Image 1 (cartoon, rainbow, N blue to C red):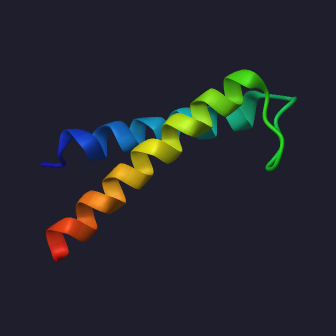
Image 2 (tube, rainbow, N blue to C red; image 1 turned 90 degrees about the horizontal axis):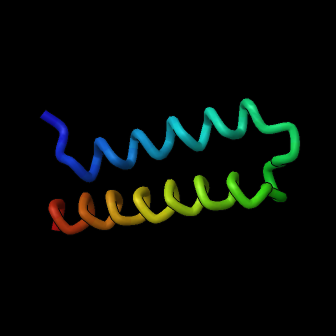
Length: 58
């Protein structure tokens, strides 16, 4: 069963994709304030998850 960090990371990814698909203001390099907030959360969780994976692998 995936751990809680992975679940939050994937949920943030889905939220980021949903926002990007629905927002008419956001682009790849320029995001609206909500889009930036969602993207920042995704990036933080992705970094934390990848750091956890590196630590586990030694």
